[in-house]
Length: 204
Image 1 (tube, rainbow, N blue to C red):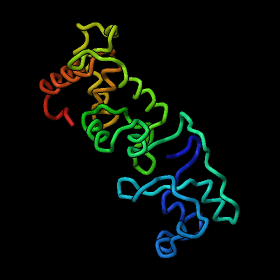
Image 2 (image 1 turned 30 degrees about the vertical axis):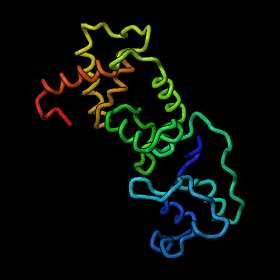
Image 3 (image 1 turned 30 degrees about the horizontal axis):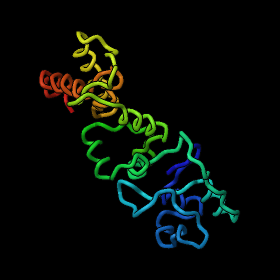
Image 4 (image 1 turned 90 degrees about the vertical axis):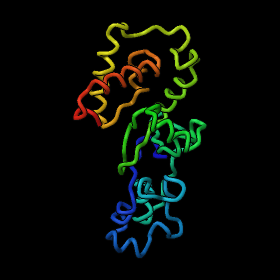
């Protein structure tokens, strides 16, 4: 987790704060020195989820000062990666990946070192959306009314599909459904119809 207002750094950033080149740091491994600040990320690092440290803590340690403690309270602006987000919402990593594939998770709020992260407040809103009672077969929340007139839905969904593709490179059906105040299944139906009618060059 990246605390709100804090700046993460990767191994190259740690090396720079210690006055080392990445190659020197790979040999000396300053992050393994006694008392060195712990990484912000948990678990084994991978190419898609590198180990990150808090820049304030590492800078203090590298100059011989005590590393300032990290905040011990959750803040709405904290950034969580996919593993942390799944745990926060009570999901398994597999369930989170499945929802991501189905475009049922929010768009990331930030991508430090090209790793998607979500604000805790974004996850809280997502959890609230998931908890709303729904009609069978993906209907709208009980008592909900369409925010967009039904006669305009096809055009509005198509517009948002193209906007998502141009801005994010992918289509988030859940986000479109929330924006238009319609059921996920309805948004999916109109998005599929739009793709079926669109020339292949417009699809991603």
